[in-house]
Image (cartoon, rainbow, N blue to C red; front, side, top):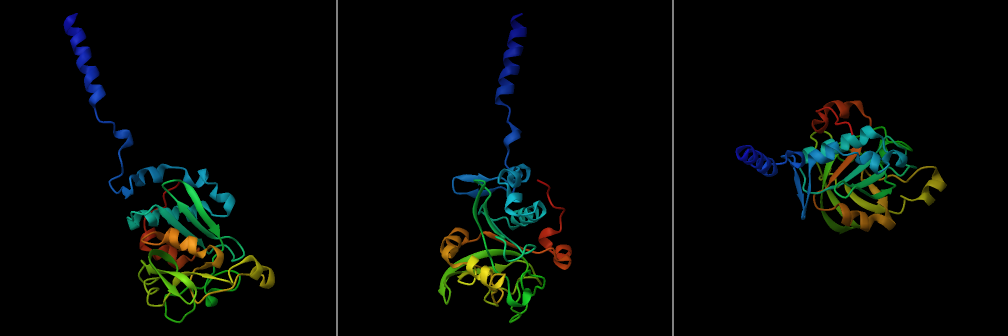
Length: 239
């Protein structure tokens, strides 16, 4: 009887000291201050549903594409920005999401390039002086003071789609033609020379939030981009 009790005690001790693998972090986990953004947790979380992103006009597939590209960037930043150009410019089609804290930080208007389309962006380019928007994944860089005030440099990460945006001076900036008054007057937002321009009143807060290495995804249901993007080569992880 004593031996049996001893065996039971040993087994209980082994169980209490065995490693718990249920909460292990994905090997590609991302440090963010004192917290950790676990890609495994993000993949399995229902962020889309928790934030009711569908009610804000963002399709589930677009969010999944954006999340997939964010993962491939292997960035230490949990902020993900999505420009959804499947929507007309009269919609609030910029979504800035904190994946770690599961919050929508901004949902507002954003412009597209003059030559990309009128109400809806349908044409895209990576060419200098095209005045068109470039699709794909970007990395945010540093701020500077330009003709639009505080602005944010961008680096395109996709060869052939947006890797020329830095040389094209495509930046994130505020503009007075990105507002509801302009929509009421013309039936659409004003358009940029290819930059993702945001409402001037919100631009400083937006730029300060996304600067320094966060992920920006400019999306359109463009077949050429969707089939050739290296960031979207793998199947989209369903949320």
